[in-house]
Length: 200
Image (cartoon, rainbow, N blue to C red; front, side):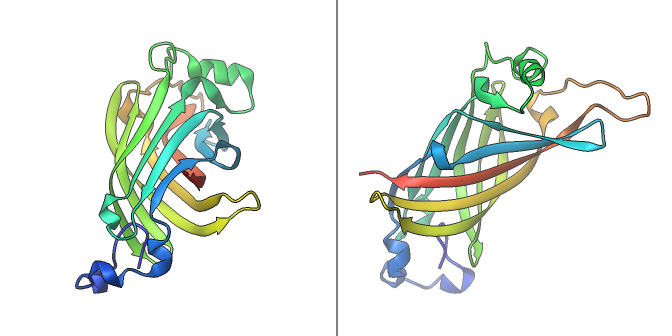
């Protein structure tokens, strides 16, 4: 039995057959910024990877153990919080060449579908909006478990990853290399380490 959907062999199961541990996770959760990371990896000059993350974001999850199709995720990211460890590079990414943060200060994700792949593996599909352009993406997730921390917070954890082509969101700036190829890859890897706390 999965968090977001039933396995194929569970099609005939009723709600009463939902595993108690899954049903116990039903509820609304908020991302914990102190223990959550939303990051990305881009190829630079065709020879190395540049990693970065966003320091400011908010998000909610709704997990429904009895009706997994009702589970949802919503994330808002402040583009001004981009951090690659280099101030000049961060400034360029915030500029009109890339994210145009004065005009488009927020990147958003809204889920549209979630499914179980078996074991602790899941897949969530949703709409990613950057620069005012909205396109669907699919994120592969691994459920890391649920626990109550020493402060009494009920937590769930996930790791996720996907790849996108930045040009599909209008992020087309680049520079040609003398040796051939381009300075910044079109393919970008997105990586997530998520810890969410149950509300209430």
